[in-house]
Image (cartoon, rainbow, N blue to C red; front, side, top):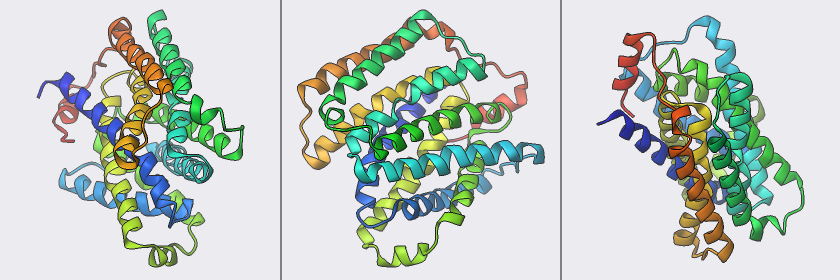
Length: 309
């Protein structure tokens, strides 16, 4: 498959699965605590990734990379999911997806400050345009929300995910996506353990249907989505690939429309048009600043290109 199409498919897979996660989390929280849901989800993701990891004969990380790996997992997996799950206790799935997916704003700012990436005028304009679209879609939900604890937690989740992208980017220069993703998720899962008292009791008391929802969250929005996202992030600039996250609220609305029979409002259609326009602008007028990165190590490039998603 052409490399560009592999990147497109990786981004599309991630967006669809992460959009479904907001609805799945709300369903799982009916039977699980936010912490127990996080641990069961990422314990499942860890098992799946470890099986793939050993099948592909992947490498163990270098010792001097362990501090960054642990920090990446703690911020991007532990903090992000605790904040997201606790936030969704009091905030609807649709509103949560809108708030959390301010991530491209944080990612672009951090990428410029830390990774020294540069965006064109049109690139920044595209991000702002998409953010306005998200805000318009959010009017129906956000207008009824105050700056509550749940909203603050979701903003923390957005900042945590953006920081995760920045922290993981250097690791993807050295390790394959399957390796970097497995390291981060394992590290994040381990960091959850001290907070997860009575975990097995929680599983025993939960209905099997809700447990299956959480397992779905671990296999698909967890393991598969993070792996496909890492692949895309290893090929293009963090600020560029993160711009696609503005599509997640639209996808979440679509899933809610099918699953919960929630019909999108006028605000949704107007905001959706702006989001689409922003993503198109980012991928056309701003594209020359977000080209695939060249690897100095040709052998490393071959390993990453042949890594199967």
